[in-house]
Length: 179
Image (tube, rainbow, N blue to C red; front, side, top):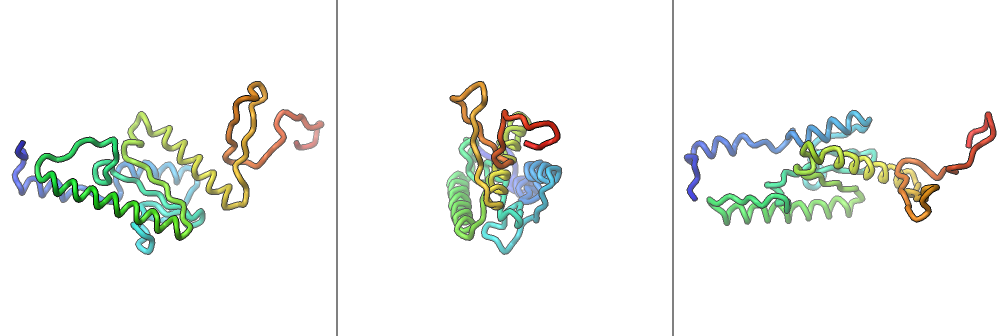
């Protein structure tokens, strides 16, 4: 199937695709800011120039476009110049893996969020998972390990505690004393 656009039209469309400040990135950045996290953008000194860098927590976040980074949710491949696009996306994936490995070897936590995970129907779940991941990183940095506890009525169910140290649940303290 031939391209419906002329070369000039296609060039104009492709040249307007941004690599920074994308809508998915802005969703994550707004959420982080409202949660009280502070960050830097596109730090050139780190491999892959991560979208979001939280130095305090030694954490980087990449917000990847599904098409450009070859996510499995994106089955669409351009029919024109197919080999070029296949090679390009393959190189992008290899570069991403290499950069993530370099960051992890340097002691950074790497979080990747895909564009499809930030659609309105998936957004809340994705941001909850990001919150949990960041809580675990903060606990680890502070020397604590996430604890698990069983629910009082369901001893067979273990639930993770992400943002607090162990506390005696179910025990009531005498009046005026803290548990």
